[in-house]
Amino acid sequence: MQLRDSNIDKLAGETFDVLIIGGGINGAAAAAALAGKGVNVALIDRGDFAGGTSMQSSNLVWGGIKYIESYDFALVRKLCKSRNHLIESFPSTVQEIRFLTTITQGFRYHPRFLWAGAWLYWFMGNCFTKTPRFLSPKAIKHREAIIDTEEAVGGFEYSDAYLHDNDARFVFNFVRTALNHGAVAANYVESQGAQRENEGWITRACNVMTGDTFDIRAKVLINAAGPWVDQHNTLSKQKTAHKHAYSKGIHLIVPRLTDNRRVLAFFDDEGRLFFVIPMGRRTCIGTTDTRMENPEARVTEEDIQFVLDNINKRLDMDKPIRRDDIIATRCGVRSLAIKPSSGGKRDFLQLSRKHAIDTQEDDAHISIFGGKLTDCLNVGEEVIAEVKRLGIGIPHPDYRWYGESPEAVRQEFFHQAKLMKLDALTPKESVEHLSTRLWRRYGAYALAMLEDIREDPRQGELLIEGTEYLRCELRHAKHREMITKLEDFLRRRSKISLVVERARIRQSPGLKEACEILFGDQAQERFNEYFADTADQPTQSLGDSAESDNSTRSETLQW
Image (cartoon, rainbow, N blue to C red):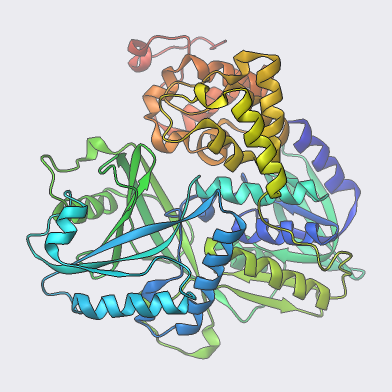
């Protein structure tokens, strides 16, 4: 907690060039871009970084093939180029993956027509990925026996990209990049509104963990609060050309349905794209597209049944997927940028995820609407241009603020890992070599983990049963990842709570040590807090037996 505490002191004591409110993908990319270019920037979020929409995605990095149907060719072209750029810039994290799309009888387009659209998509993406391929029902069944092809009339394969780690981890790495370049960032710091005074902004902030309030001063204010951009603009008395419309999407996480590493794509009963996405030893299924009037959303039984009905109808399995098979759920609100003044009556389901940036020059205020992970590098570059236009100097305009560590550092890491036979320590639960995973997640910082393991072999041991996490990773997370609550680690810095059953997490002896490493004297408090928030079950210590899960206890729990 020392990093967060010291940054909060800096927030209250300095005047920044730019303050960014919101640590989702838009805010994190903007902070990394500005800090990398030498701008004195601060970033706050009322929850954890990537704690909203940015942790509820499908983990896909795609060029928006569905927008071809609505003739948004410029957007598709832009997103495809952004996808390609991410693959090139983050080769360990963002990788090409094949999509197998099945078309059934009665669909609005013939499969060969859609196959032709996939070729157009490929050309619009500069022919960067593998070529599309038309598939007969027999060929589909040969590739994926799990697909029910009884009513299929054909299909096709094409490529997009996929995040190897979870979306929230990808977002946090931008926050970490910003910190590395001198940014001051803190999670669980809420803006209570801002006002313009003496050619600058004063934002009233609250430390959510303590209730303490303080002021943050900055020359430029950026509202990157995701679905809550409109609400914060109201607090700060800002009028903008764009507003948000909201769409709820949910995903279900279930045991792995197929061993093949490809995305299965269908069209649901309402004609919308529907995916079966690999997630290591699990599978992610979804999504829904439900119009919402506000950004607050939750998973309903109706949502769950809709996804189960659609997936069971399209897969050929001995047993259908049932409610009891669900390991975890994802529920997020897509923020759709709209311009009320345009008077357009476009179908809600045809609205795209493109972002919009509104700048109030007189007030030195920027609002970021909409957007998606695929477009994050464009958001960062556009924010730099807007900040420069508002009179803030850009000390290092040519600096490349994104991407993985240099190739020489990568080669040194893998050379050392090979010499010390690191991959022999790969946990049996892992689907890839330990060296590959450590490099992808930590880059140059993985070298320090090798040293930790050399000094103390216990640092290379699996800490939490059923996961891939080593003891040295928790030590790293404590000092560098600003983990404030247990959920920050289990759900966002990692994806443990998405892929491991809750009861198994709770009963793992290693979770006790993980809490002690991360939180010290607050270990039991953070453990109790997490399990109280995530289920209506009595809180227990990890030392209790599994049978005691359903018992009631009145005494104070201690480690």
